[in-house]
Amino acid sequence: ELKVEQNPLFLSMQEGKNYTIYCNYSTTSDRLYWYRQDPGKSLESLFVLLSNGAVKQEGRLMASLDTKARLSTLHITAAVHDLSATYFCAVAGFGNEKLTFGTGTRLTIIP
Amino acid sequence: KAGVTQTPRYLIKTRGQQVTLSCSPISGHRSVSWYQQTPGQGLQFLFEYFSETQRNKGNFPGRFSGRQFSNSRSEMNVSTLELGDSALYLCASSLDRGEDEQYFGPGTRLTVT
Image (cartoon, rainbow over the protein chains, first blue to last red):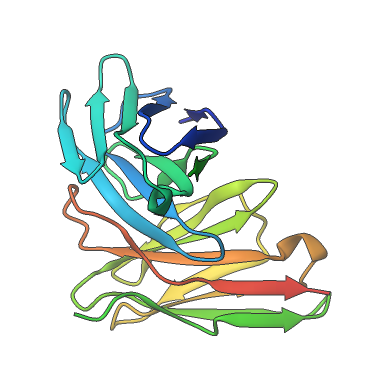
């Protein structure tokens, strides 16, 4: 059974600082997703990572995937208040659409 | 291009009742998945439909069921509601080409009293 571990669960950081969220998964997969969720809202797709070594960047967020280590990271550069949200990684079962989600990281950016 | 729509957005039901939730995927998307989100259990996969067939099912009791219509719209039904069924129910759609994003709808917030 695929298991996804995400850490940290909570992250409070100052504006302008850098930090990384980690996502480990237990079995082979062909896709890894990162989502953002604001309070009371649905999930907003951030990145889809498909292959080993994949790196994607959007603004202050950068995601990478190491399939050999079964590890993905979401790096936040020079954080701003607007990035405050809960971030989830999700791993697709190999060859199917079922997503197994991590526990989420609640990120709070302090001015 | 319209996104994933879910109706109703909010619902209050009493224990023992049943409920039906609806999801309309993005036009052209054939795969529809359902997820339950609760503070205690997080996001959990319920089931996935493709071309009117259930392809995957999560670990939920038989009270949870679903179906998909020929136009790819999907419904999920929960019978004999329990307090623990209170949750945000999210629907996601994708093209199902194995590399595609899954787009989530706004969700239906179900409260069971």
